[in-house]
Length: 293
Image (cartoon, rainbow, N blue to C red; front, side, top):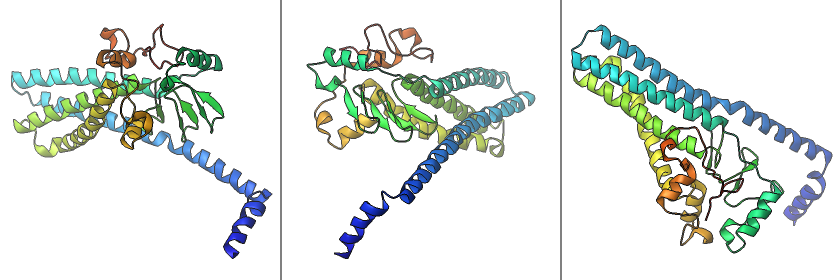
């Protein structure tokens, strides 16, 4: 009885009092500033790893050439440097596009048009977000960290300081691809240099350890997103399917076939699939681009 009276007083008296309102405001404000203050930290850490790996590789390449090795080693070293610089450039380009890609917005007219367009298909009907107090397109989800709904949201990624969704998924996928290729090249080249005795292990161990750990960890993420890309699914939808959500229990309602799934993310022009220069929308897509059916 005392516990019931205490909880009743807490909810009716204190929770709605000016003191509780001030405390709630202070906590909300503190949390907002906390999120804003730590958001740049993972980005700085990621850029630091990229910059340090490239800087250390350039120093070691310069040291190898100064040793005046045989022609085959010189040729391999120059080839590695050119390829490494090329993929580091693509990696950085993709990373920048992932971070600064403009998010997709929608209006009530867009939602009404798609509601009529897909009136016989519940999988594409707009849903209502209680936290935003507005309707959102199919496959959009609310991000509690960004405090907004994101079209075809995949996940919130601290390494880009925002969400991965329809607006930047292609750039995010290419970023993972180029990280695996670039760090894989670094590891294979310096492992060969160590094996042939051009440089001792104490000079290459740091680059080998860093490149191997990054390649292994990012490869797992890359292969997972390759599967999601080929199946036209997202991380959120994969989790919902794993926990047995009714909508995803027996089928993937958004699967279009492998080629159309790739085109939906990488674009219709296959020559530009592996360049981070365009999105995936076409004239047949809606504003927020679920995909055409």
